[in-house]
Image (cartoon, rainbow, N blue to C red):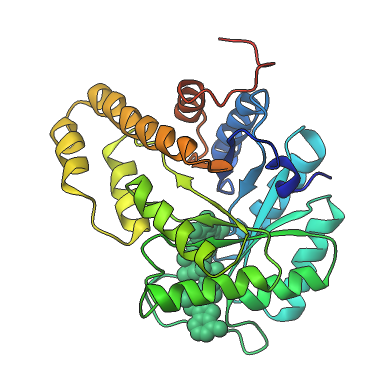
Length: 297
Ligand SMILES: Cc1cc2nc3c(=O)[nH]c(=O)nc-3n(C[C@H](O)[C@H](O)[C@H](O)COP(=O)(O)OP(=O)(O)OC[C@H]3O[C@@H](n4cnc5c(N)ncnc54)[C@H](O)[C@@H]3O)c2cc1C
């Protein structure tokens, strides 16, 4: 099974896609239609997020197993330490390995119900993503990624502390980091520079949200943990009542962001797809990220 790092070794910027586990049969159908629509575009890898509770966690394991066994995609499974003992984490990692998943995004996760609430570790569990990176690496030949935060993680005291712990988890055995959502290319590039300035050579990958609706804009602002710049709100907010115009302008904004990041030599654009493929397909086409062998149309 190919690793994410092997897939990102080329000279050109690649693209990858992120999904969440389906909640019901209707969700499942949407997810699989999108997976099949994107498969022919040959994304570098496809990831599935890991939820806070039982059913959603089963959904991640089931779906990623299906990706590994029934598609040509390179699967990456997310895993968090939330409400898990070390024994349970070992079990999940064992499941991933058993179905052929070699790539894991190792995360601490948020307290269920309140992402800004106090972190309470499982009595037999882990405290930080760094420990999960070490655990995954100790259990087999995995390619491991971690998360990074262009504006700093909401719980970090300042950017210096944030960078210190990010680099610690990379040095603990992670091969790359995927960045949380951000608004301007420079916000991401400053994060990349902070990591590089420590001497750490791990890849840092930007996370990209197709801004197709006011909801995706709100979600981007919420997840980024920062205030949206005035120029962005001025471009999109007046179009809130016109779905078509909002989508067109939103995709222009994301195309401009992607062009700048590609010019800066990022290895990969990681798209948060919300389990739909249309906007991502449009963006990768506009950004010339579609491999030559994919027929047009
Ligand atoms: C690309 C991406 C994908 C994600 N996927 C998921 C998902 O699938 N499921 C999900 O639930 N959540 C997901 N998240 C959200 C993530 O779980 C939360 O943001 C969580 O709050 C932080 O996780 P982390 O792995 O960055 O934590 P950590 O790296 O452990 O950091 C948490 C905080 O502790 C600090 N810290 C780290 N180590 C130490 C130390 N040794 N001593 C003191 N302080 C320390 C850090 O600076 C930071 O402030 C994702 C985030 C991103 C960016």
